[in-house]
Length: 108
Image 1: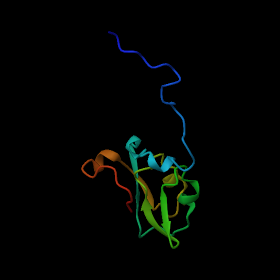
Image 2 (image 1 turned 90 degrees about the horizontal axis):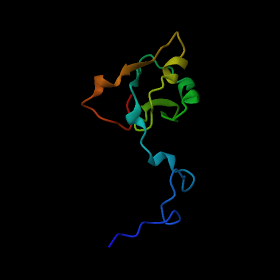
Image 3 (image 1 turned 60 degrees about the vertical axis):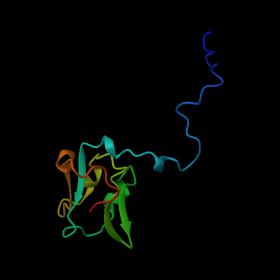
Image 4 (image 1 turned 120 degrees about the vertical axis):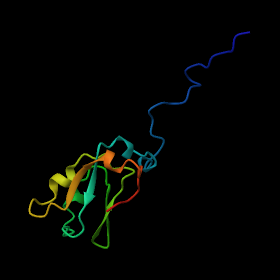
């Protein structure tokens, strides 16, 4: 006897966001080709990178740059591009350079 297939009303809703604040649960750092690397000696904690990061992946605590949320950073490089040219505290490094480290949550 053939198994009865589900009707469209019985299938789970696809592509739906079940509620607010759920995006943090989705790790998107695996998409990254380049990883931002911070040179703490050069960083002036101006927070320009924080303002421009589209993924809210730049971590500041008590006014100090703590690193990057690499679980959510997609490696777009906007942080490095917006870092003042006189300072250039952020460089984008190819992800293959870190292949043994995997996806991290914070780095700096």
